Image (cartoon, rainbow, N blue to C red):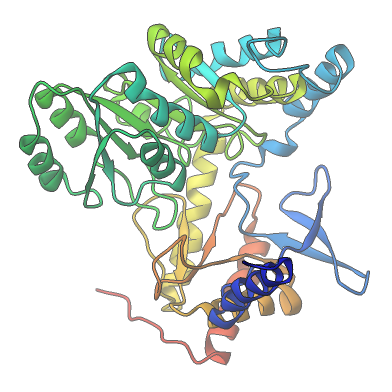
Length: 411
């Protein structure tokens, strides 16, 4: 029999393993102050304050500070109070939720949308529910899909096939090997967040048409930032009509929180009616829904902000390449800098914070494969030339200090 005291020892052992591998995560106390993003204030362990610049936030466009978003949230709090009052099925559906879903459906050119408490829950709940709606469903999943997609597919109890990342030839092999009459769904992403590469949307849609499969596209790292109205990469490439289910987040480019799917009215109604992750969860507070709707509405017409964001990412990549720092560049807004060792990654992260007031968290296994540990920078339109200069100078110094390898530019 295991004694209670043995549990503590096992917990200590599990945590010590993370320390030994250099993967133990620490949280720092950050206070974001309205109107000052990307700057924030960190409270040190000794209680003193340090002014820092956040370089790893997912508020890609700074919409979490936008006056339209804040005004909508204030108005909703004044009108409706703090909480929603329950699950959507009981008392948690308000006019703010309906307005948000209408904005999202319009954004993606779909009949309907369904809002969840996070994009993780939206993926998990939807993908785990689909086999209930389509008995015998086979889901084909990209090997580098987000953990929320993997978890939803794992939990659904149905058949699954994993195709090599962005390998449409391998996907074709898997589709050809299965019963032509079986219902099928291909789940993939538009922008993969760790390397910043794009999914082959058109090619996958072609296969879906050929084999009679549904398409499920995660646009979490693209909504708000790509396309003429911020509908994502599928909108940018004029492929939105070929996607059956779009998953997106309200917590990144839109600067608030929550997640959603957009699809046909029939699909949204079925998932709403069968998904436990939707049925049994208290809905977003009205103020959150109102702020998200205001953000979506604003970004539909702010192409200049999207262009400034892309320009900022290109400038940072060019500067880092010029120093020979090993970044991955697939043409997206994500800037991964490969360190390749968890201890070095954490050390550089710590020194950037302590010595330069630059905050970027290390990314280690299991988020990325061992040996590809990295710092992932997320430039925004409000990271100006001064912030970029400070970051590039600090990385140049620390890369030399840690005696890490540099790469030669081609050409």
